[in-house]
Length: 288
Image (cartoon, rainbow, N blue to C red; front, side, top):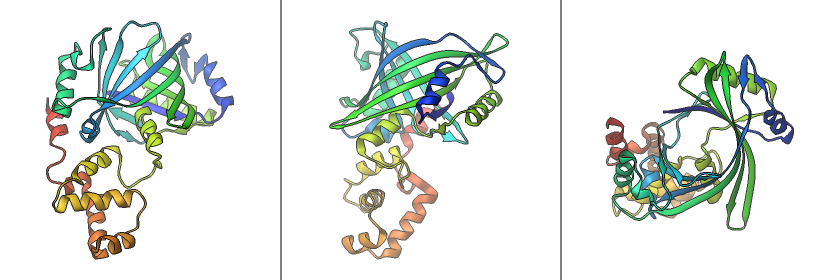
């Protein structure tokens, strides 16, 4: 389980100050280690990994032979803290993702994709500065100060992020203390999204607040192909998510507006459970 707090750093002044940190509240900080990362996120053509509630990252870090393969769960942000399932393995040079030495990761990929081909979904680059936060010599957290570079066709975006990831010696109380200190001393913005989620929203030109989250959008896109009532409901949710109003959809689809309103109300309460056949994969994996 990955437990961390993430912040956007909108001003260069704060970025420079965080770059030169030597102490943070009562915690000491180790010397900085610089790292260049290139992250590729893979999925099937039909976004089956996202629809299962996860994403797959392959990271190439400067100075390392081979890559790191990681599976993380989507979402998981609450009250300033990210809590995500995380499965990590080193991938020696020359091996494909499907040849990952970690059997659990290989099984998860097959469970998500049913053996379908994987394709690059997004690639991002980041310059990362890594330090360790300690209290009385005990490692509490890893600090990551990142300059992230996103590209999507002709559009570019560069942003800065600061992460505090708890280690085994740290507690929720430590994270809360660190978060409160950072927010009171620097102009930071709590970031509710992973880098993958933010990059995907950038690529798709999505606003931060929408009716559907990324998993829900992937599931609805799949279900919308069904020639039944669930396909119809998924199309309605996708159209609403893209900005259509209930009144517009009522005229376009010749559906009474109260019926659309009832679907939205039910979805807001039950989320993907409105489709009785969704969620089975994730529940199965969580039991293993």
